[in-house]
Each structure stands twice: as structure tokens, then as C-alpha cells.
Amino acid sequence: MERGLKLFMIQKIREKPVRLMADQRCLHQRYQRANPYQNDIGSQILNPQVKMNKLLTVLIVAVLTGCNRANIKTNVMENKKNKTENTQSASDTIPKVTGIGGIFFFSDNPKETKAWYAKNLGLEVTEWGSSFEFRNANRPNEINCLQWSPFKTGSEYFLPSKKEFMINYRVRNIEGLAKKLKANGFTVIDEIEAYDYGKFVHIMDAEGNKIELWEPIDSVFPAMGGKTTK
Image 1 (cartoon, rainbow, N blue to C red):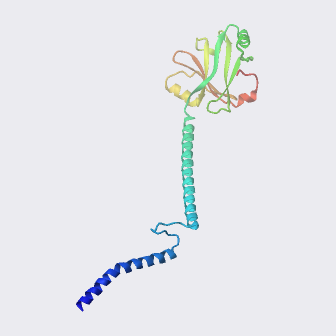
Image 2 (image 1 turned 120 degrees about the vertical axis):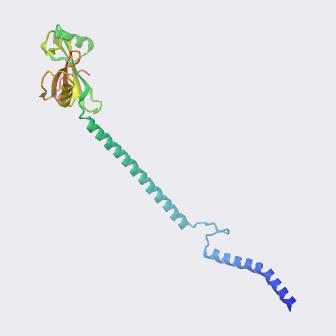
Image 3 (image 1 turned 135 degrees about the horizontal axis):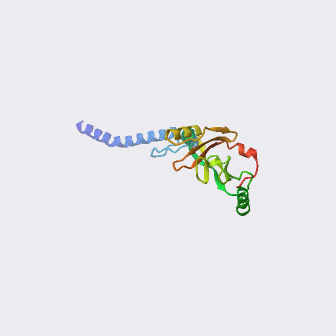
């Protein structure tokens, strides 16, 4: 009996791996029937519908990511633009010279001087001299001008300077600039005067040169027409 039990147990032990393998094969076959898109080692082979769903998911993520990057880029550009505009708005009020507005000088015969420059250097001259036309560097569509004019030698227009020339400077915030010059101890000869084409005031620099400061209204000049040198 004991020997028979041992033989029985030995046989059972021998049969167990065989049965276990058979059971595993059976379970595997059942799993494959229930999951036809699984390969023998369990790696997923996607059916067309699953592949399409995953592809759509990837496309949606890509589109959302692209939109998010575009929004970030747009916001950065807008912030940069607003910052630049705010900086420009603040700087537009700073009183300072922005360019040359005119060159005036003595001549023994202003009429002949203008004719000589017209004939030999091609200036377009009028009774007052020549207006040089140019474009504003910050606003290219805006026409600006520089006035060139010979004055009769001894003209009182240059007084109290004893020099034979006077320069006109284009300025921004002429009131603030005149106030600043007075505070720094420089002579402001007259009061600010306003005309259709801008505001003017005259000062003396550190070497006794009379200077004309002009805050222009440039939009007036194209409407006035006339010849210009350009």
C-alpha cells in the first residue's frame, strides 16, 4: 500500500507539469480567441480602429501644443510691442534737439548767392532760400524740411550774436527745453512764439552763438506746396 501510494504520488508529480503546461496552453488559446489582436508573446498588434484613435489623439495633442506655442509667442510679441510703445510714449516728451531745422548765414548779395547755388549746385531756390525735403527716420511717410537761407550781411536777425551764421535746431517739447536752459543758467532771448508751422524761441549758447529752436508742425509743409531740394 505504501509503495503503491508512493508510485501514485510520483506519477501525479510527473503528470502535474504536463497538465500545468496543457492548462496554460488552453488558457492562452482562450485568451487569443477573446483578444484576436494580441500576438504570441502578449505584444499588442493594434487593429485599424485602435490605430486611428491613437493617431487622432496624437494629432489633437500636436494641434493643441502648436496653438499653445502660437498663443505664447503672440503674447510675448504683444507684451514687447506694448513695452516699446510705452517707452516711446515716455521718451516723446523728453525736451531735446531732434535734428537740424535750418542754416542761415550772411551774404553780401543774397540774391546772387541763391542764383549761384541754383546754377552750380542744383538747389531749388525761392525768395527765402531753399527748402531741403527729407523723410522722418521714425515716421518714413512724414515729409520734413530743412531751410537754407542767406541773409544780408549785418542783418539784425542774428543779434545779439556777433557771428555770421545762425543754426535752427528742430526740437521736441520746446517749453520744457526752454525751462531746462533757464534752470542751467543760459540766456533765453525771447518768449516762445507759435505759428501755423510750429513754435520758435531763440537762445544763446556757451560761445555766444544765437540759436533758433523750432518745434515744427511738419504736416503743414506738403500742403503749402512749392519747390523743394531733394
